Amino acid sequence: MKILVIDGQGGKLGRTLVENILTRFPEAELTAVGTNYAATASMMKGGAMRAATGENPVLVACRSADIIVGPLGIAVADSLLGEISPAMANAVASSSAHRVLIPMNLCGTYVAGVTGNAAAIITDAMDRIQNIVKEMRNS
Image 1: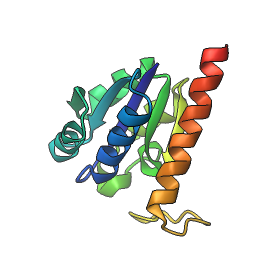
Image 2: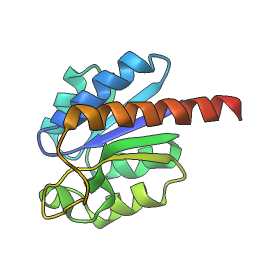
Image 3: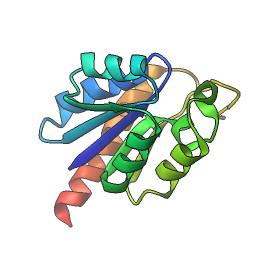
């Protein structure tokens, strides 16, 4: 099971996702890709052993991932204060992987219905990944 976590800016969300995924899915082959060094370093502090930084690692990792996890902005060109290039957003959006995108009302994108309860959103994301993993094992 290949899980790809993508994050940018300071990587706080990415680090939280990495920690939760490694705890809940220790058998997963987790790769973390930051849009900048700070995000990558943060995810590595969260336990990611395989990590890279920049546009090309996002493009390459999206090709082989089974599940892509990150903020909603990773699928929106020019989001995360411009850190997500159109090519990166396209790689995420066109990947055959399951996408678990964390809704956040940041960087000019408003997601209706998001109340800001980060802990509940992370729990919901981990539950969704669990369901995807079960479905893939049963296939």
